Length: 183
Length: 96
Length: 207
Image (cartoon, rainbow over all chains, first blue to last red):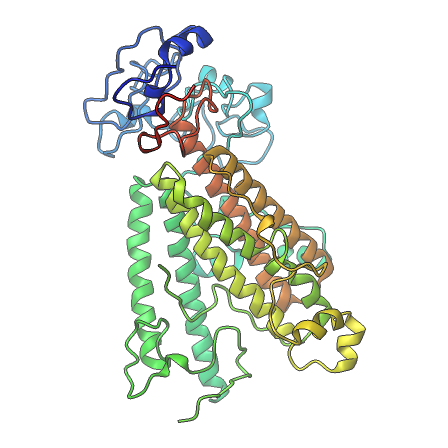
């Protein structure tokens, strides 16, 4: 394997020829299937990553980047729109019921009705949860938490966390059941 | 130290613990979401409250860190109670 | 470096000593899925991590685990104060007592002292973060088992707090894993080791 003289990233150190033989495409940064080696354009506002031009295959808006600057115009299109998308219902009150059709890694994704870490996500709601286009096998995926419902400080100390959506009590003991019935 | 003094110290400590948890939780969130503006604003707000409450506690009950000013004539950092000692078990090992 | 704050993360005030409970809870201090192992694991793993956000997460969670070491030690300390010899014999605490009296020593409930083999540092971001995720789950299950065995609310309150912290840490490590994935080639996450195959670790013309 011949390394190039100036190797600054692991991708540069890997033989392009070997990679092409293995995968049939060129080495790509974000892992999307592309047949061209040219660098993907960055968002005009200086987004951190170069993503596919025009976003993922299923997206028709936004560059798909997660820009550094929150005021970046691209962000309104590339950020997860599940709170504004009328189809996505993740922000509905009860996130844990089976009727939930919004995005998020839940059992719904197996039936293809929700957008979670599966290809269905991109087909139905367009949720852009800033991840790889489709989950690769042999890897674990945890959804990124969004800044949302907080508890007040005293309740947070009692529960053990500031975030209501991260409270998962343990029920089997009579003491625990008594305790949680009083909450 | 009478009971009401213990209670007010305990109450203040619990409030500081509560605020401390909120600040710490936000810091953990920001580690993986460094550009979240709402989290940053919340962090700044709670951190300020925590700082004010900590100052109030230290003025009354002594330093919470070894780098805090004891504001006394002697080094009271080493005074009981230490965190694992309950309110009723004040070791009082140091003699003044 | 570290700075110590002279305060527990969650208040602990146990009114009734209970040596049998102490024997079980001490596993979260020096046991295979305890807080000491967790803290050392994250402290050791953070040095070679390729991403600042992952380093920050490991550092801050490791620091919090040290606070949890103090909490578990405090629980055991308060449970084993003012014990009579009859209580020590009756509760089965005598096997610990003979070697350590009422001192706090990192040991598992089985009697095996803490060992570095309880945690791993593989030097690969996905392997290390996967281990961290598993460690948090195992710690949570250990707390579940403690909650099954103990009824005293003075003990269960801080244990419940510690258990919830494990859940939150799991979420944070999961997010760290996602950040690592985002910076990798999703067609093959395992094509190279981001912690080792960087510019400063070039191996030249290795075959």
